[in-house]
Every structure is written in C-alpha cells, then in structure tokens.
Amino acid sequence: MDSYTRYGPALLRKARRLLRNEEDARDAVQSLFLALLQDARQPSDLPYLYRVLTHRCLNLLRDQKNRARLLERETPALRGTVRIGPDAAVLGVDTLQKLSHRVDEAVMETLVYRYLDEMGQEEIASVMSVSRKTVQNRLARAEAELHALAETELS
Amino acid sequence: MSEPREPLSWLTLERFALGELSPAELLEVEARLASSAEDRAILAQIRADQSPLPPLSCDPPRALEQAHDKRRRQAWLALGAGLCAAAALLLVVRDRNDASLGAGPNVYDGIKGAEVALRLVSDQRGPQPSSFATGERFKAEVTCPPALSGTVRLLVLQGEQLFEPLPASELACGNLVPWPGAFSLDGSEPAEVCLYWGNERTPKRSARAMTCTQLKPRD
Image 1 (cartoon, chains in turn red, orange):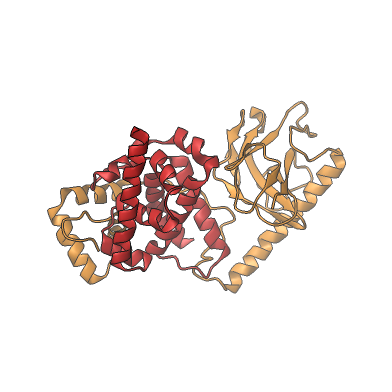
Image 2 (image 1 turned 90 degrees about the horizontal axis):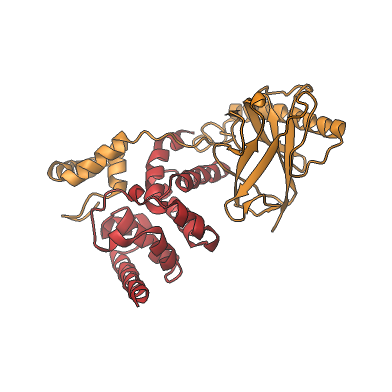
C-alpha cells in the first residue's frame, strides 16, 4: 500500500505528538489505514489523512475508558519541541482529555492543529475548509476554556 | 502556509520532506528554512526518524490506488482459497479433539503436556473480553512453551468466513507474548479468534497446535 509507506511515518509522528505514547500512536495509524483499505474511494493526500487521524486520536482521548491507560503511558518527550506558546506547553494528555469534554470536536480539532501541529490560522482554515474568522473564533473559545480549566484546577 | 514569524507547521515540513509542495510554496518554505534554525531542526527530525511502521494486516496491495484491479482480485481469490482450506482444517481439528473452542489453554496432539493460550486485550474493555463492538480494537497475547517458537498465524472464523486480521508472526514463545499490531472485528456473528502454527498457505492436517477464543457481537 503505497500511501501507507509514504504517509505512515508522518502520521505516526503526528499521533505521537497528540497521544504521547508509541503504542497507541501506532495503533491509531494502523487502524486508520486498515479503515482506508475498506473504502478505496477515500482520498489519501496528507492533509486529508491528518484530519482523519486527528478525529481518531480525539475520539480515543475523549473516551473515558481510555483515560487511565493513556495517562499511564504518557511520555511527555514524545510531544517534541514546542515552538509556539505559552498555551501549547500545558497541553498534556490530561488537559486534552478534560478539554475534550468542555468543547465540541471542531474546537478541539482546531486546537490540535494550532498547538500540536503548529499551524497558522490560514493553514488551519485551508485544512478544515472554513474561514479564517471561524478559526479565530474556535481558538478563542479553546483558549478561554483552557484558562477556565486551569483556574478550576488551581482553586 | 503559515503567517510570517510563525513557525512552519509540521504538516508543511512533512509535505516539504515528501516533495509535495507547489513551486510557490516551495520557494516560501525554502526562504523560511534559511532563516529559522528551529524549523530546520524539525525538518532534520523528520528526515532522521526511521521508526518502522506497524504491519498492515491482509494488505491488499495498492488497494487505494487501483480499487478495481482485476489481477489483484484474482490473487485475493487464491488467498481466500488457502484460508478456506485453513478453515476446513480448523473444523477437522475441532471435531477430532472434541474440545471446546472457548477461551483458555488447550492441549493438542503432537505437543503433549504443552499448553497454548491466547488472550485478547480490548482497547475498551481490557483483557479477556467476551464480546466485541464494531471498531473496538484488540491485541493478542500468546502463552506457549519455547518448543513451539516459530511461525504462528492468527485466524478469525466468523460465520462462513475465515480471515487473517494480522500478518503471521515469528513468535518467540513465552508468557503472554504480545502479537505485533492490533485488529478490529465487525459483523453480527460470533467470531472465533484462533492461533495456528505453521506458515503454509494451505495448512496440512498434521498441524500441531491451535487454540481459539470466542467473541460475541455486542451491538
């Protein structure tokens, strides 16, 4: 499967940044391509696969049944170098899981592109096929919830 | 593309490394890379990362690229015939041993006293699930004596179908040895997940060991 060989490594790196553990990252990428094998009509360019993988990883994070396992396996070093901040620096598995229960999936997806994939607003708008204004609104929502979450935990 | 003074995104750098940027994007990225040591460092990480990919099970070659390739379909039919032979073998062995194919270790002729156990671990329900839901992922763990180290196949018997959800493994037997990769099940019929020792496309009746565990559909 050519697209697996070509894009698999890039997707594995992305899954590691998001899930922070090798095993779940590998499972997420493997299951993505197994699903693609079932439906040959789906496109297989990297921006599209980035989106599909983001959804899969967010579903995994949101599911309470995975919470303990993901926290136990979390390896912060797999996050890699953080080039933007400061919010990006606090986005560990625990925060992402909690946040995923406070905002909708589109906001979470936008947040992942911004803080984990380090995309600019214009690039996020292009990948998600929405306006830049929508991206700004979603990021503002995500950041507000992040701060609210931090305050809740401090108190 | 990212805004000025923003880092180049991972996606952009990945596409750059793959040679998938348009000429205009390429010019911009090259200029940005020339002025950003951080971006160059990420690109170097991408190029240096040689982590092996997990195996894809039942890999139909170029399925995404050539969905209607007739020759490939014929190859799949040949593989299917081999797997059907394995299904027949499963039934023969099951009858001969009059053994339950439920979870737990079984003893088979040719390996007297040797216990073989297959344990499944669900990503949603943990070890030894008794049922499956569509999309639920399972890992397999095998317990077997060192004498049985060798090529082992994981087969799933579901209704009239037999399939191999993960590639054969060169197993170094031990206690709860993890099988590389994970698989999922769907459908409305119970599934029997079985271990089969040997790498023949058409398994022989002299196959030595097999153990299965059964999962019922949960949906």
